[in-house]
Length: 115
Length: 113
Image 1 (cartoon, each protein chain N blue to C red):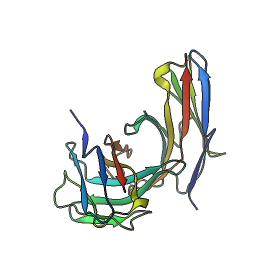
Image 2: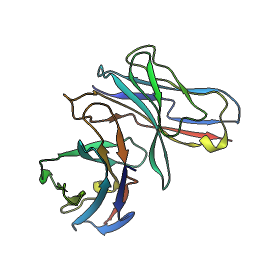
Image 3: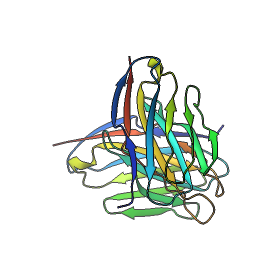
Image 4: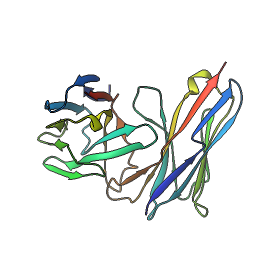
């Protein structure tokens, strides 16, 4: 089954304790991206990757890191989480370029609470 | 500035009734527009895509329209069901080359029995 898998789905942590949210897709997509979703603000892009070893900042990258060492995986790293990073996080993947319509395939979401 | 607005912010209807959600965009250049459905606690899923040359497209009880001149799109839901309760997000792709998207804030639809 084609899917984007995120882990963990739910996490409660404390300020300053490093954490990683994993994202894996099995559709051979070049493009992967992370979003956070907050009430009233919609989906905002954190980081994206057009292919392996190619990453770039989105609209709200502060406090986050990413890496793309393999095509299928795109982990999101919070080196020192703060309460304002409490949010619902989504990973998405897609085929980029003119030959594709750009449909984004989203994971199930990871709800993070930072105390 | 590229922007997507949606209205209403939220909507409550009774099961079996119809409703229409609106999306206005100021995005250039325009590639396509998608409506996504997001069930509570789940990731968004694409419902339909509208390209520049398309005016109307149906997907079951969902009908999307696009007016490229006025830069407006609508999503009409016919004979609503309880399972239609969700957020509906309008997303405009900025160009055909990269993956530059502009997201609307979504409309939260609640269908009551």
